[in-house]
Image 1: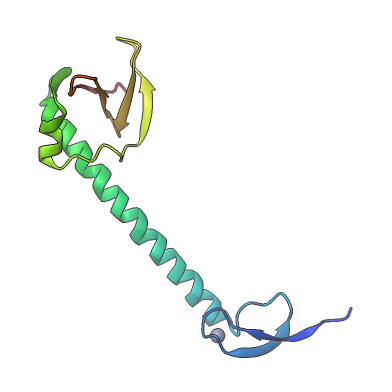
Image 2 (image 1 turned 60 degrees about the vertical axis):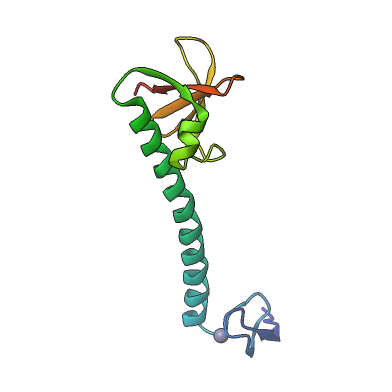
Length: 123
Ligand SMILES: [Zn+2]
């Protein structure tokens, strides 16, 4: 078997090294450092979104105040810092057959008149 040795550039330290053409790092340490940095960035990005989702969930939980259903103006949620573009999933509510947007176990239905209905999803 012929191994093609080429001049390569390490993705981590950017230094050149000689190696097999499919190598991307000058050492195992630099391979690990590169992947750890990627993972750290990913975790930070996910963390930001999770924080927003948890905040949304807390606002819905507070608005529902242990009731089964609550109607209130969207503005009341916005005033608390609710961000409508962050949610976890959608589900058709068996009660009214409408599609609710959820942040974890709390869901809401936005209406045309600026009001929304908040529910707690069943497990
Ligand atoms: Zn390197």
